[in-house]
Amino acid sequence: MAVSEAVDDFVEAFCKIKYDYVIVGGGTAGLVIAARLSEDESVNVAVLEAGQLRLDDPIITTPLLSNAARGNPTYDWLFETIPQTSLNNRTIKWPRGKIVGGSSCINSHVFVRASPEEYDDWEALGNEGWNWKTLAPYFKKVETFRLIPNGHASARHSYEMASHGTTGPLETTISNDINESNILWIAAWNKLGVKTVLAGAESSIGAQYTKSSISSTTGKRSSSLSAYYLPTADRPNLHLLPKALVSKVLFAYPKDELIATGVEFTVADNRYEVTVKREVILCAGVVQSPMLLELSGIGSRSILEAYGVETLVDNKGVGENLQDHAFTISAHQVLDSKHSLDSLSNSPELAAKAMAEYAATKTGLFASGSNASTYISYNQIGLESLKKSNRENSQRIPGLEKQYDILLARLRNSNVPAFQFTLIPAYSSWLMPEPKPEGVKDCLSIMNCVVAPFSRGSIHIQSSHPGDNPVIDPRYLEHCFDLDLFTTASRQGLKLAATAPLSEALDKCIVPAVPLSTDDEYKDFARQTLGTFYHPIGTCSMLPREDGGVVDSSLLVYGTKNLRVVDASIMPLHISGNIQWTVYAVAERAADLIKQEALTQT
Image 1 (cartoon, rainbow, N blue to C red):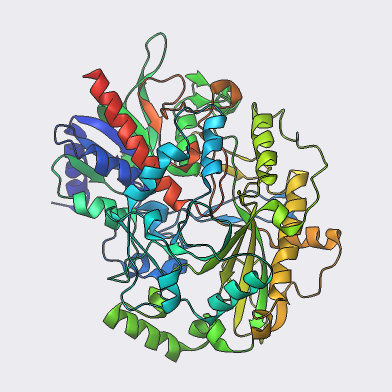
Image 2: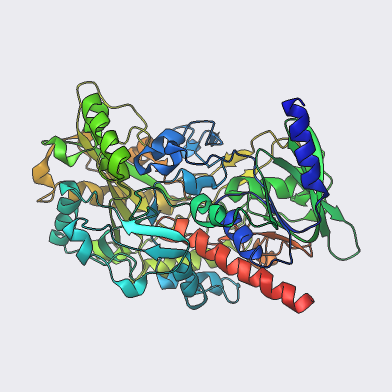
């Protein structure tokens, strides 16, 4: 039998099964939902994922190789934005995981959560039950936190066990690569009056050694693939179909609301349909969940009609309210190579030695994950109140004034971070707008992030073909507040670099190449260097429909009876820190909501 015939037979057999739930997207959230729903042996669960299933792939499992996955079409969708007017018409690469496990298999492992007040803000926007109190148990449910045996002494004093989970599927630790640059980082912040905070504590304000989604015992990446799918893969009621590109959700048409009956998808250019008895759950991510809604007839009528898609639910909120964590970045040449990982790329011999150590013991540089980060509030660096109008964009996005009022309240709250600073002990070529200058060897980089931007972008289809990428337009720096905030963040990052003991390890500043002084110079610096932290949210926002919402507080899509979205696209307002842990917690809570609703319907 030919390979194509065998694939076709397998897919046809897959489609003949009567599924209770069809999950579109086998990424961070999708595999959580699949694992939790399939705990009930009486239901059949299908997962359709466009990427490959790659088991024991060292690009995925080796922590320090995550950069090798980004930009590689085997692992990455290779999305990019349209030219950004406020960034001198630069386009920004937007890596997203195209693989079973999704972006949890290609991210940088950082495992942090926001302050309690930021989750309470979701409820304040009209989402009953979405607050810190209800989410807190799910953060713990996700993880098993352990220190690396005989690990770095600093790690043993940088956490509080009560803040962490001990029985969850995902393994987390504090990376053993707490090198001297990390230690200097913490000490320099302390000298600036910023305290050290314990990793995972409720209040993230301060400098900390961040947790990583890495196993403390195997030294491998812990992802939704390893933590949620592999332990459940043998369940007879859990069915995964990789390399399946979903083109749209199928509906029945009663009078009041649509009923999802299945999905249409392609495998190897052949079209198939799979049916569902209970729910279709979109877990396709910030880019593709709104894209699939639009391809299925749910979105702004004017956009759908422009590409020949029949409008089933006219909702202008679909694809809007896009928010992303962006950063400016500086690079500094170090005096001693021990303060930089650039030595791995500069010296093949050193890289080979480190890889051999990892292969033998799963320790060393290739087992290292996230490094040190610092979160500070708006008033910690002595800022005056923002005096300009915060009402930009409010006409384009209904309900945005409510979000802006909350953001302004956060800036006044000393318990809520406004800025995140992250140390990268390398030149960070994958983040820099320009290659490393000739003759420059060992560097470290400082990333300056605004954690809750005021600018709002969008993601929309540009054709009716599911294989065509949508238009990604974050509109970075469109709002005047963001330029002011990034100016402040950039000043603080360069001030840190000039503070001992960190300054004593630095030779000279590489980026920016000339000293910055005026606000205008800092604003130009932002336009030249701004990049993405890869934390987009909001394109299927959980909000009241009149405020631009796409899903309600049960994550059901407005206008449908049994279509949900569960991924970062439902987050209505950005939060501080990397979003991985929050996506896992949201998915865990969503799984419980789905189970509870199923019980009430039986």
